[in-house]
Amino acid sequence: MLTIAEMLQIEKVKVAKRQPSQEDLRRIPLDRPARLFGRLSDPKQIQESLQSMAELAALVRLARQDGFHTELSPEGVERRLAALQRGDHDAVRYWVDGQLIVDLRDLGISGRLGPDKRPALAEFMADLNRGESPDVTGTIYLSSEGVGRLSRDQDRIVGAQLLKLMKEAIQDLNQFISLNSQEARAYNFRGLSYANLRQYDKAIEDYNKAIELNPNYDEAYANRGQAYTNKALYERAIQDYDKAISLNPELPGIFGLRAFAYLSLGKYQNALEDLNKAINFNPNDRIAYANRARVCTYLRMDEQAMLDMEKAVALGLDRSLLEQEIQRIKATR
Image (cartoon, rainbow, N blue to C red; front, side):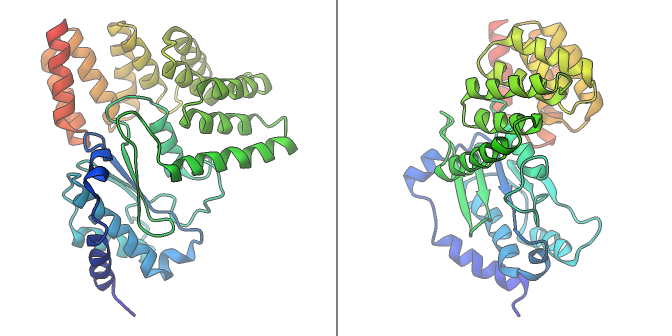
């Protein structure tokens, strides 16, 4: 049986033959983070399929060769994959290194399950739903059915395979809803899928239905708020965020979402208060630090803005993009 190191070498040779063309490189948004997924349909494959695990390391190599900055070494990747295969209790399944987010939390979880059962997919869908923020994932590397790259350019064009994934989710939910028309969660998840296809009006219709069926559905209010944010309807978004917070003030990410709406309306003090709460809930929220750096710059709190920018960079955001935005804000205030 081949060792992981030997499999890595084989995959390195394969990947070298798949170098992107100049046109491919033009479409790889190197100014946005890259996200790597590992998903296997059978939990046993984590221990038994060296080929599938080797593909994960190949994806890291591919991302590096595409131009994404990361300090991940082949040896480091090999050690982490080996720990997963051994079933170590403390094996790392999620890490951020430079411009690369490696998310293996869905390993061994069936691809037919929805985001409520697949944390990596749920986080990715929420990431896409944040719209045009410069720290939104730009390229997705998948180990499903071999090594693959799904790139989205600056116009947010979604790769065909990713579109297929979202459309299949909608088809599955359509069938489920036809048999369970009073299930609020199904409408909420279908709304998320529509939102990720940028069909915000359809998403809002589904969130409306979910809320009609369950008037205390905090996540549906938060998701509808994000859809309104993507339509630049910030006041309506804030109303939904207010409702979600009244129902569940510990809903993950909710204060950061409302802060972005406040920021977009120029209500910087409100945004600052929400971002302080967001960071208090999650001290590793790189997006909250980045947004607080922006808000503090608007408020001429430059020293705090620089501290927040450094923290956001340390957590994996691109320094050059954030610095450029800070300078732009300074020039307009």
